[in-house]
Image (cartoon, rainbow, N blue to C red; front, side, top):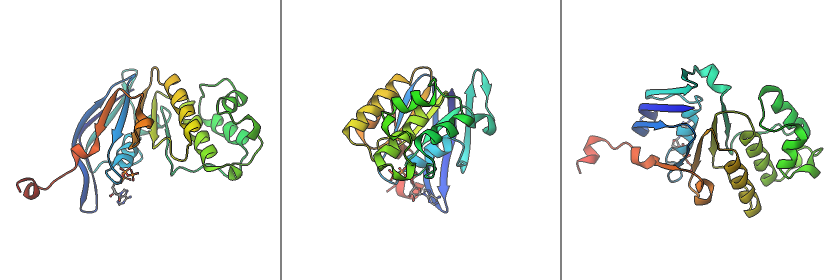
Amino acid sequence: MQIKLSGFGKRYNYEWIFRNLDYSFLPNTAYAILGHNGSGKSTLLNMISGYVSPSEGTISHTYAQKTLSLEELYQHLSFTAPYLELIEEYTLTETVQFHARFRAMRTTSTTDLIDRLYLTKAKDKFVKDFSSGMKQRLKLGLAIYTDAPLLLLDEPTTNLDQEGINWYLEHVSQNRKDRLVIVSSNVAHEYSFCDEEINITDYHYQSPKIKSL
Ligand SMILES: Nc1ncnc2c1ncn2[C@@H]1O[C@H](COP(=O)(O)OP(=O)(O)OP(=O)(O)O)[C@@H](O)[C@H]1O
């Protein structure tokens, strides 16, 4: 997967979040989008996923020498973020089975994925009874092990303790080969494996009046 942003910008009401972003995300590379709280990291990740439209500029997603339409893109990306919800009424096993009905997985079976999550003992537990760290591990596991060439992770270690962070780093590192991985973060350990860093604040818009001061 390759992604090209040209003259990319986002404005909410009258406020430009970022502007004039020209960037190419190359295949088989891991990128970190960095910046302080409210700088626009999640907005950019959502735009890369096709969920949020740009206010100006264009984006293209290319896979196997073909430019993907928005509908095709959804089958080629895997995305998780702290604000995305799980179905609380399902057990862990039901959650994994439900997900696997719609998406091809890199794991061999439901049990295989649950074992990789180190959540075997919780296989029949309802998601609503999971701790916040268990939920985050489940969301990350579903994202990392979905067989998609584009993996987007927004603040991946939210709610994880040190053991959970180690688990995430091990599994994302094992599964980054042959994929484009983009992580949005302001915590160093979340993106230590990344090859490239983009600071979204470099693309913050200043009006010509402010610039000249
Ligand atoms: N739907 C929206 N409508 C209006 N403003 C929005 C909307 N979504 C985001 N914003 C604004 O855009 C800016 C960037 O938000 P965003 O969530 O992308 O930042 P972030 O860098 O991911 O922050 P954090 O590190 O806190 O998660 C913020 O000022 C936010 O208030």
